[in-house]
Length: 162
Image (cartoon, rainbow, N blue to C red; front, top):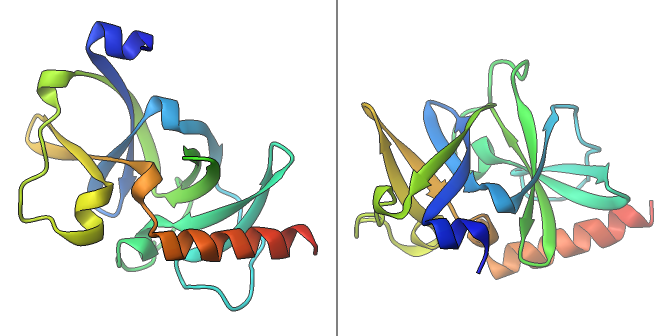
């Protein structure tokens, strides 16, 4: 049991994608980097922006705007790249900005409503109400399907040989 579980508090890294606010458990976020364009990889899904070299490994970079089927950002001036640990994999995600680290209690984490189905339900961990808006806490390990993880593994293997 880690200190977070003993205290009943969770720390979340809150970030923006489009007009919405999302969060990831702080223990899943390895690093927040300033946006620099990743190295593009040909013949990959549109949501896969490319790869970066981070910590001596090739890390695939997904564009969360594309993943969530939102239009491209007009500017990436405030964009950041979140390097997250998803199971045994490292994945980087482009977000529009990182706002804060928020500490919440277990009571503040609401279960997603039953209208969420399929993949969306899998990667939604909880909802957090903050003032007049809702923050969607994501389970970063579930952001991609098993098939998409296979694609990423192939991309990383191919990029490591380039």
